[in-house]
Image 1 (cartoon, rainbow, N blue to C red):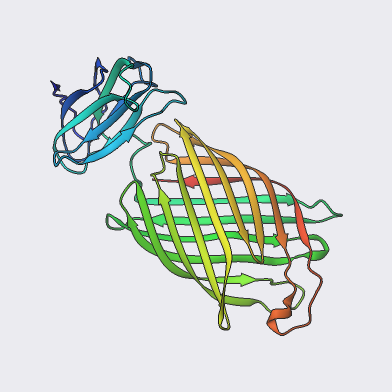
Image 2: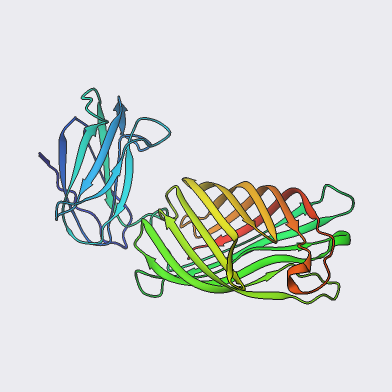
Length: 333
């Protein structure tokens, strides 16, 4: 074992401590870490970090459990991870080659300091976006949007208020086609967040005098990874109609951060209401990266469900479908 003591600044100071040590198969580097500090270990993507072969990195906590691991990073066979310490103590960084190979090496860069903007969990997160849809048939169009307010009043308690997606159709088929607003409560442990709650849905509502149909909804939510990691989140809403259950909507999002820029792919859909598929990017502004501007490019459809099931005469059902372009804003103060 190679014993290396890094003395980090306090949580309010700027990151200043950096060391570089050899990356060797079977190597171990011991580090004293304090609560609230962040460890950044890498063989790529950081000044002084190098690699050959397929390197891996793991972090072992004082109780012997593995709390962080990375194989491939920087779109390469290098390795990198960030870890925010929740319990002070003596940690160990283990350096290995992938699988049973011993043919790897390089230099390992280690930084210890206060959490960076990419890794800190904001107590409040707000996001909203809107997309215009240009209909492919005639003079039609639609507006699709979503809203998210996420708060952590007490760690690890998570409270999430969201509306996704909401759609308004235009042209000769105008009307609110669908949307849901839900409130969920759960736990956010950093790498994993889960929550459940309830909400209200409005389906197949037209603005030509026909009544709205509001239906209660049960909603689940899950996310893997914090905002700074590639992660996946999904929302599943289930409505009850008589003695049957119908899965009516889902919302899935994957994000890949690349410094101040994040790439994302999003999909949403419903039995009645909205279909959405898009790619986009979020650009974080300022040194603290608390304000992000998003651009959304893709396609969407707003489906006007005939109201047969609501004891009114059936009406024609058509999609407003076409390319979608939109913008949004995200705050994580």
